[in-house]
Image (cartoon, rainbow, N blue to C red):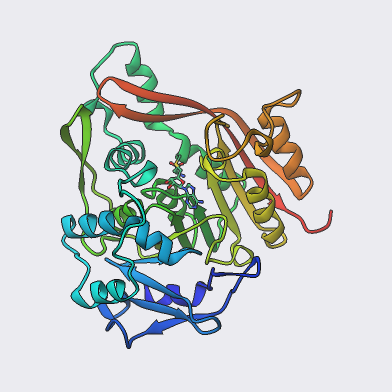
Length: 367
Ligand SMILES: C[S@@+](CC[C@H](N)C(=O)[O-])C[C@H]1O[C@@H](n2cnc3c(N)ncnc32)[C@H](O)[C@@H]1O
């Protein structure tokens, strides 16, 4: 984690229903700080100057989530295996620190779930940095579709919505960034981009691909048939103006009011209480700041949020109408594009194709 990132982070510990928001500093006593370079931390502890809550940095990735100890305890085995496999194992001092806090003792059987799973990681790397010609079984009807999508994918379309409207933001926050494709597109038009995701493996991988830290990643295995893997290949120049951290979009350590562009792409329908989440973001956004939004409203009856929390798709109003109505209460829609294709490969014989609703919106505090 870049040292310079620290000044942008605040404490997310929940104190009487509100985030503490204290400043974070390096805590060097319990686990000696290990630097990757003079400007980049590889491992250490950061501590809140107000409430004393501590957050670890592992393998260069800061973990700044509200229930830090629960996060570590639930993910301990996977974190150890993942960091070990990626040649940045947890140090002896850090292991002692976790042991002293009993964070090495799982509360329940540990298995990577959802976006932490190696298969999801593989799918998202293929979604963000595809090479269809290599890993998909060729089919003549698919060829024109994929060639068209490769020329202009969802992420390119979203970035061009911004450039067409002459928006070149200073600071951008990409919420639910996964392995970083949208952050990558935004880094070409913005001064600084911060990507935030709850899944440690995704954030670690995004940093490797786009910043080359703690080591450069140019290949990643894709499960193209059962357990059979093939290597996806990509080679992206390291970007200086990008940073990724592990955090919760519903309680972010990066202050939303400090950003002039917020990016919410393909996460609304996978989040707990989507309406509360979006209204919370809109309330905190600075006057005249922008939101780039995209979703296919893949509401799941058995998903995280009960159907009462969906931003419609239940009765008379469609999700896209209701989303636009909600945004209009907070500012103005600059441009909408609907539908825009989003393609996610699963294996050599399976692609998911979603039809997304995309919106560029400007927050107005009074209008
Ligand atoms: C469907 S993926 C979309 C990824 C990326 N935005 C894209 O469009 O390709 C959803 C991502 O949101 C992340 N996510 C889900 N809930 C989150 C939360 N509360 N805070 C941060 N990230 C979250 C997941 O880990 C996952 O990487």
